[in-house]
Length: 264
Image (cartoon, rainbow, N blue to C red; front, side, top):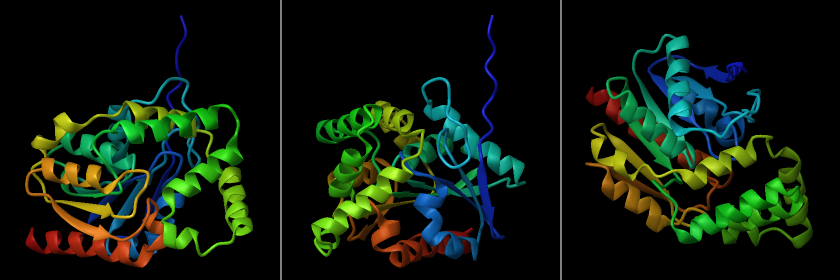
């Protein structure tokens, strides 16, 4: 009989004030996805971010990742930091993680911000994720980084680079791919939280990355339409708002959270 040693999830904690939990994207991490806006978030909130297995300092998991486990790890991090209630910000894969945390812990979550995300993958997006997964697992990391650059960076920004500059950027991405990328993309491909959406009864903002070629705006608007009372904000970027428009992304998030805090 074998036993599995529980994984110790690494977390980032900054700032003071109302609680704000962060859920990052597949193949990313708290620093990678929220680092450019962390200081601004922490100026008004106690920010707690948890790295999934294989990202940050969290070790890889011996078994496939499960959405409920990641959602509960977010809430466990809030418990560890003494936060009874908190807002949730989910980016990309972190959107379904945040949604599931809100549904599983409805009395703890005060509001939701969901950026560049969807409740499920359509056929086109599943195909993109399948290629992403296959390229990572086969060790073709530079080709994967070039593919992701093409998918995640908006055309205007990408066309500001020369082909050599784009390749150099892809080489940096390839070198930084976290060891948990394959497992995280596998989870992304299995996720479907559409049945959860009607149960969300807290203020919700869906930040639609309107030039997103990975998670198309149609899927993002579909998510917003299925959450009762959800609002949307458009951000003219590709899939990486923290790269293309971090200041605007920060302003949208903090503006919404500030309004909701004033109302409570």
